[in-house]
Length: 242
Image (cartoon, rainbow, N blue to C red; front, side, top):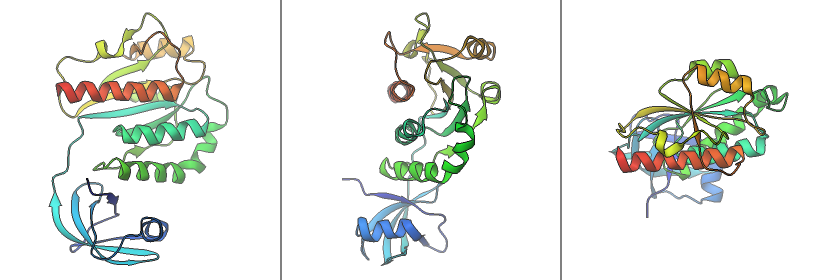
């Protein structure tokens, strides 16, 4: 069984620490003890470490060895239209587990008004969700979570292969739109619309900026369902072909 992995702010002098609420979770919920071994990441390298001390609000680690850190199969930036926060947070958790490299909330025409202002207050919570999901899925690095962007910024600022999830029945199936030659670490941008889909103005802007409309089949999916399914397809394709 794989060891649990935790994230630390830094490794210095062969030592690392976790403080505050996270330390409390380790000692009171997970009940870690001195002498136990875990993996830790400083968001760059991964180490095998032994707990040197475990108190209520402080857990310290002694580094035993540096481990091989796995590189991501694909560097995927997810541009997701602002939707109700409970659904967005589910998407943040599952997207992190599925290897999303960067999350960018987007103010779409059909996004509920005011969500972009409320999002700023949610950033600490969202970063915590991403951290917990990263530990659960044993990622090497935490995903980057950006402040909400305007639709125009998101559409014009994306790079790599650009894929837009679209309800149009004429859109190409996602799997068929992926390149046959799949290089490890290739950059992909995926954008998903809000409830109600893209407006014609948005669809025209996406097409004009080099985005390829892709489909996941004939049924109409919620944003979070479509994104999770698309991420799984992309990951499986790179696993098979990279």
